[in-house]
Length: 190
Image (cartoon, rainbow, N blue to C red):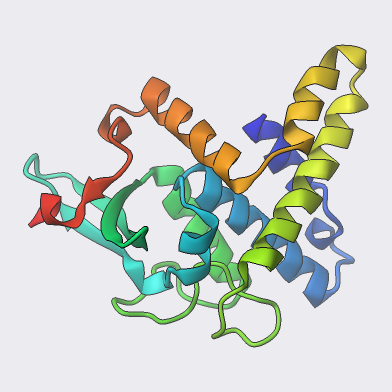
C-alpha cells in the first residue's frame, strides 16, 4: 500500500510540468508528510513539533555513519533511526523549497513546511486533512484496478496517522534489523 500512496502523490497535479508553484509545493508537502509518518513512525503531534535541525548524522561503534531524528513525544526524547529512503526524501523535499539537501544543526524550520509562512509548523488538523486527501485518492486508484482491490482500498481510505505508525513498525520488523526497536531513548547514543 505504501507504493500506492507514493504513486498517487506522483500523479498529483503538482508533479506535472504545467503545475503552479502552489501545486508543486503541495505535492512535495504531501510526499514529505507520508514519508515522515510511514518511514519515521512519527505521531501527528511529533510531525507538527519537530524541526529540520532534529536530523543529525553520527558514526556508530561499527564505524558506519547513520542518520537519526531526535523527536520529543509524550514527554520523552527519542532517537528515530532515519533510513536511507527517509534521508533521500528529506533532500528531495528540501530541494523543492530551494534549501540545501541536509539541514543545519539547530535549524528551526518545521520538518513539514506550510506553503505560506515557512517558519510556522502545520497544525495537527492540517496534517490530518492532507492525510485524508492523499489516502482517499490512493484508495480510489486501488478501486480502479478492480473489485479484488476493494478491501485494501477500504483500509487505505480509513488510514490515520496512528495506522501509518503501526505500518512503520511492521515494515521495520520485517526489513530493517537496525530499526527493530524503532525508537531509542536519547541516552542510547551518548
